[in-house]
Length: 279
Image (tube, rainbow, N blue to C red; front, top):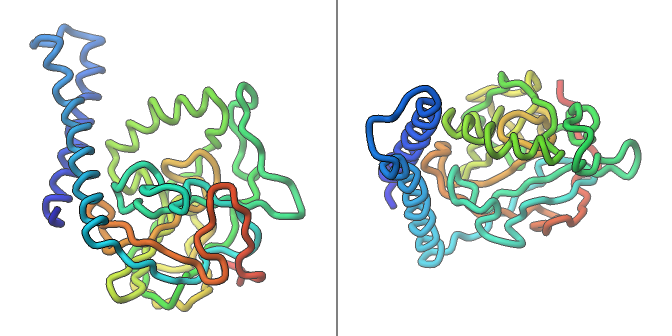
């Protein structure tokens, strides 16, 4: 699928989701001027487009499997992996937004407060400071140029209870989809690593940027801090490599962290022992 077609289908998907949302809201206040079954057409369209995009990327991966790119780890200390491409591809269940080989990681330090467990009933939500990943430095995985950096979106409360998770998927998820890629990944940084490879750090903490677009950075340099902005259930880092800076058209690229590899789901690993402090 060409870049132009990827962009077109991404925009069309968002328009269809918007139409479904407007249709549902309007249905509460008035009788819609068309048969009931017509309302299902845009819903079906969203799923068909998602399937077409998924199959197109899957065929490309089978035909020309991308080679893993080795980089430094984006964090320091003791962390654990979630939604890892070592266990399944696409790791997050979609090729969209260049997420084919993306990984989520949470901090699990040996000392200090532990990461709170999922709560079925109570508390409904937790403050971000309860999670050890919140505020952790995010580090450049290689010598690179910053092509995008933003940190204006708020860090919301956790979504790690049953009620909060339902809200996250049913209500918040739709709203963020309508808002486009930046509302899903939240505050984020994109690095140009050269040779057509880009690194993306998602869910960055509000107001924590230490770099801006156009800056040159070196491996290990602090970029920002780990936060809980965007489509996130708790403070964590969503990291991925991709073949372009535009999330709507980029395809995922496999990664391997030096000294770590690709950690599996729930695998605990220790990256760089020391991290330079973010200004």
